[in-house]
Length: 149
Image (cartoon, helix red, strand yellow):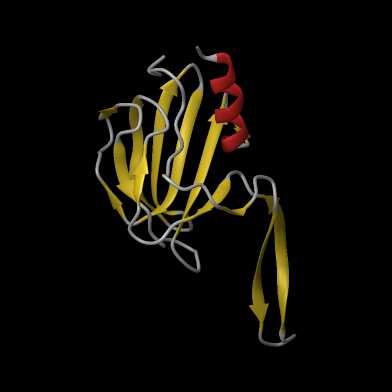
C-alpha cells in the first residue's frame, strides 16, 4: 500500500463533461449507405474533466508509475499503482513528468492535460480501477476520504 492520507483530485477545478458509465458509441461511416454503422456500445470507464491544454495533473495519492506511454485511442496514458488493488488512470495527456518505475507523492504534479488519441479537444479522462473493476473515480475519492481520518 503506497497511499498517504486522503485522496486528492487530479485537477484544481473539477468540471465533469462526461459522467462515469455514460454510453460510448463506436462505429465507422459507410460511404455506400451514407450513415454510421455502429460496431459497439460500451459504458465510459471514467469521467471526463474539462481542462485547457496544458493544465497540471496531480497524482490522486502516493503510488508507483506502472505505465507512461502513448496508446492509439487513449493517447498518452499514465497509470499509477496505489497498492491494495487500486490503480488511477489519466488519459489523453500532452506531456509526462514521470516515467515508468517512478514513485510519486500524493498531489505531485505528474503530467499535463492534452488532446492526444481519439478525442475532439483537451480534457482529462480520469479513471480508477479497484481489483480490476472500473469504479466511479469521483465517488471513490468521496467514499474513501470519508473513512480516512
